[in-house]
Figure: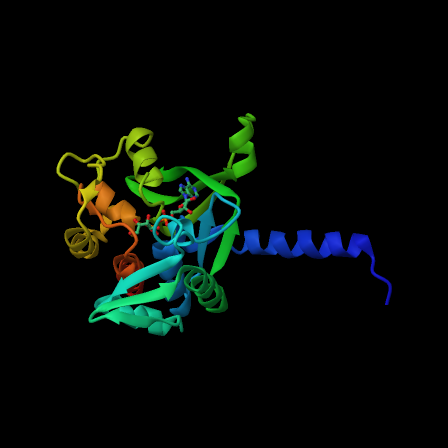
Length: 259
Ligand code: 48F
């Protein structure tokens, strides 16, 4: 069999277009491919929901690749261990209640399990705005990251979804744009993004679970963005809370959609 270059091009473009077509009306659009977004993608897809994750960079995994300061090991506390098991991530118990796992393996398995469960991942997509229809977030406005980087004036396209998950981590880009452009009030004390506090691992890890909520109709938050939005502490390279937060967001949305 001789390879035909045009067939390779057709195979890529037609298959990709089908993936996009299947994502025009999603159950859930997840913005941000860090640990919390990937975990949410896994549980939503496993529940049979049409879910896709949008990441502006080429690589998926967010802040997990580098562990702590480039030492590519993550720490997960006892309550996050069930998720390491679910994703078949190898770990060892460093000390009572402290587990260590390889950051590279962890990211790889989060990606592998979420896509095997049927989750779609789009890299190089910058989410630049939300769709706001009759006081409900109803989708995302996306453009190619290289267009955004070059500053070319090219209009974005829109993907609708029943729910959007804000999983952009520290900068909370989705919540910020929704407050600024959509003029919406989040369910925080003053309706705005409160901004994260300095490091306190224990308090941050406790807070992240209660902060994983619907912050505006149609818009859930997970991961570090949850603490940043509600003005809670950062926690650094401990990842149990990130994984649990992704699971909590997925479970809450699954419950809503099954009502
Ligand atoms: O930052 P990130 O890993 O978020 P996370 O899931 O996890 C946080 C931890 O990595 C760490 C921590 C642990 O204690 O605090 O920081 O909350 O991943 C966020 C991803 O979102 C992407 C960004 O490139 C990153 O990969 N992202 C940010 N803004 C956009 C975006 C956007 N506008 N469109 C698409 N992707």
